[in-house]
Structure formats: C-alpha cells, structure tokens
Image (cartoon, rainbow over all chains, first blue to last red; front, side, top):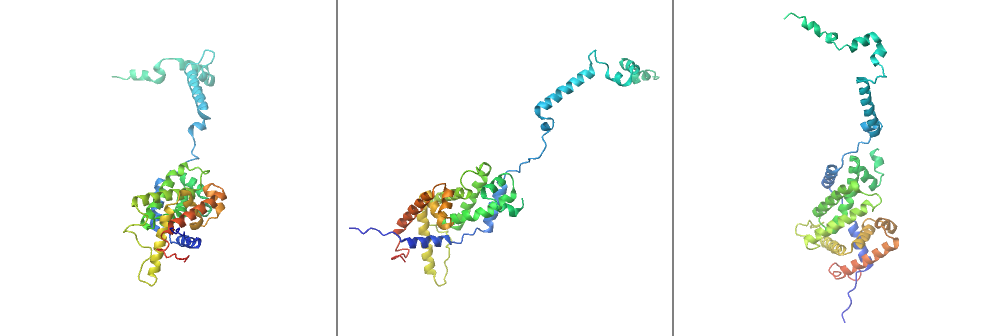
Length: 119
Length: 195
C-alpha cells in the first residue's frame, strides 16, 4: 500500500507566506517615473465648467429666436412703416425736416455741386 | 484642494479627479498604487524586470479605464489585483514555466556565509510562486490580501464583495491547495518533520 503523501504543515506554509510577504518590493524611481509619464500622457484634458455659453446669455435658443424675430420686425417697421405709424424721425425732429427727408432729390447730398464743376 | 488634503481621498475619488484632468491626482495615484501592483507582480513572477513591465501595464489599463470608472464597482486596488494577476498568468504561460529563465537576476546570492540558506530560501519562494499560480483567482486573491497585504477577513470580504464566511472558505481552500501543491517538494525544500 502506497503511503499517502503528507501535506506541508500549517506552520511551514505560514512561515513561507510570511517570508514572501517580507520580500523587498519597492518600485524603482525609474518605474515610478514611467508610470507617471503614462498617466499624464493618457490623462483627459481638464473640464472647463465656468466658460459662458453665448446662447445661455440670451435665455437659450427660445430667447435667441425671439430676439431675432424682434430684430427683423424692427428693421421692417423702420424701413417701411405701416400707414398708421408716423415716420419716427419726424416724431423726433418735427415735420419740416420730415419733408426734406422724403425728397428723393440727390441735392440733399451735394451731388448737384459736382455737375457745376467746369469740365 | 491642497495636495495634503488630496492624500486623504480614497482611490476612487482620486481616480475621478485624475479623469477630470487633475495632475496632482495622477501623482498621488502613481505613488500609492504602483508599489502594490509591483509587489504582487514580483511575488508571482520572481523577476524584477518582468514585474516592472507588468506593473506599468496594469497601471496603463487603470489610466485607460479612469474616465469610465464607476465608483460603485469594486475597489480600485481589488480591480488592480485582478488585472495584475491575469497579466502575470499570461507571462507565466508565455514563459512556459513558473521559474524564471537564465536572465533571471537571483534575489540574493553571493559568497558570504549562509549562501546555502539563501539558495534554499529562493527555492522555497519559487515553489510558492508556482503553487500560487495554480490557484483559482479568488483563492489566490484571498491568500494574497490576507498574507501579503495584511487585510483582515472583513476587509477582504468588502474588497471581494463576498461574505466573511466566504472569505474564510476561500482562505481555507486556498491554503489547503498550496500545501498539497508543495507536498511533492517538501523534502527538496527542506521541510522535514515540520522544520
């Protein structure tokens, strides 16, 4: 009959494990340097949390579209005001000037002076 | 946040800061975790050059996964233990044997008295490496966390996300497997009648 193999004693195994635990395993400065180099090379860029968002300044896309609509309406009214709306310039400066502004003649700009130039 | 305050943050918090671009977190994690993975690799491989390669690769995998790291998952160190163990296993398979090759640098061999004792110590460590490499992953992890890192059974249970009873079972089965694996070499390693 073959004698059963006797396993290692508990105390021997514990001593072996303790010996392994004491193994000097401090990483070299070179290894630490390489690991840090990898870390910094692979690191994502920092998040920028505080930069202003242009759209948010105007209250989001809804606000921005409202602003655009108002700008278009304002331009249209100023360029071709409805009949019930008086010319805004005349409202500010009076009718006399208003009559001159509606004169399509180019004399208001001094072009006629150029025709008088002897040629 | 001052650097000394960052030192008190746990690994998962530091990893989140690293992923957000905090370079100080990168330095702290490097200093804190590299010794752990290197120690584990050296114990399993017995070769400093290979252990350095494995440690660097394990840390690269950590940097890569950092943006996706879920703080609710396993502890960072536990995850690193598993990665390091798998990398070591791959190396051992490629090596084709557990003992390192001719380019292995002996741990300590010189002409001073006690060289025979030193050689026996090296042989015992080599045998233990072979036995550890043959263990299932969770048993190997439990034994390493208990005997090499000094964690208590409740601490190991938290890291492995199992009950304390499960840890006790893993340690019991792991040590039984180690003793059985080393039994054939008991005489060669100088273990006679328990000495």
